[in-house]
Image (cartoon, rainbow, N blue to C red; front, side):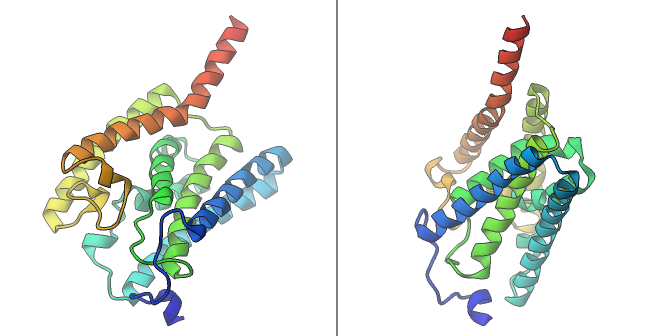
Amino acid sequence: MDYYCAKDFAGPSFELFQMPHLMALAVVLLFTSFVIFLRWRQNQILNDTFRTSLAVLLILQEISYHLWNIYIDEWTLQKMLPLHLCSAFVWLSAVMLITRSRSIYEFSFFLGTAGALQALLTPDIADYGFPHYRFFHVFISHGAIIIAAVYMTIVEGYRPTWRSMRRVFLWLNVYAVFVYLINMLIGSNYMYVTHKPETASLLDVLGPWPIYILAGEAMALVMFLLLYLPFALSDRRTARNTG
């Protein structure tokens, strides 16, 4: 057990887009595709079971991460408060699934999906490669955030709007300022608004502080637009057919 949960992992280090990384991404894609099957079956009992199970998985994964950090003596206020976007959306996605909250959905669809997708492609995972606990935690928790948003969209029939996209982008900026103030108060680096993460990430190519923050906002807006594009095209096609 110490091998899989050790603070100093003796196994292979994580490497971007090598076989373990690609296999983890493939598994996330497979489970995301399963949502299409749920829509096709239209079985409410199966849907409710999946929705509840996914919420429980999100909660247990995050609890296990806190317990692991306690185990390796790394739990601190500067690291473990749920202020990173993905940490927050683990809890928010679980609440969304349980309550079917439309208010949380619009934030989960844009912020949760965009943040989790970036984390899956360039995970902040240090040297914890497969089969360490941290490797599984990163891909399960972030994958589940995406699956939750996809489920609410495809199975429950929720959808974003132009207005919700603008609202989410505005609150993202308000939240970033709030988190920056928290960082200044307690000496943390939540949302990486104080400095870049220590491990390789997409932020490395976006310039120095604070340029990478502005570039990150521009990228977030582009990702929001790409996420909304299928709905915009569908609306345009519907308007053309009824016009």
